[in-house]
Figure 1 (tube, rainbow, N blue to C red):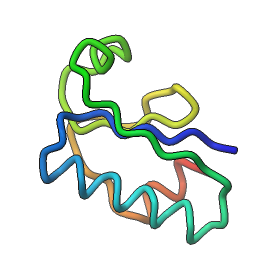
Figure 2 (figure 1 turned 180 degrees about the horizontal axis):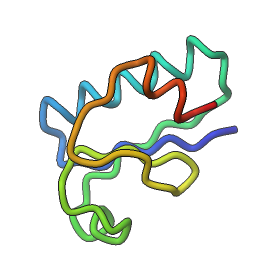
Figure 3 (figure 1 turned 30 degrees about the horizontal axis):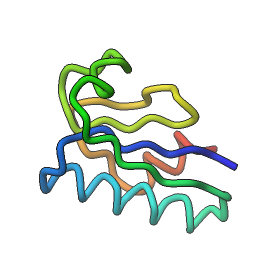
Figure 4 (figure 1 turned 90 degrees about the horizontal axis):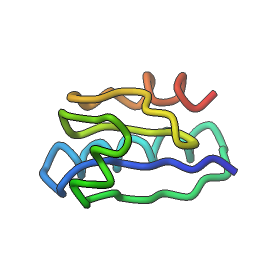
Length: 77
């Protein structure tokens, strides 16, 4: 099971990133758990200074932009 974490304060970009990540995981058939991390201290704990960011299994994959579904599929594979 993959742990997908969307790091951000809940802005529209953060919501879009969560939506894209969920779509990507479902389309490739990955078992996943989605978590939205909104606490600034927790986000900084990942070393992220620009949100939104996406972490997979605790590793930050992208920060400061919203990748499309195809890019997220590659990150999850």
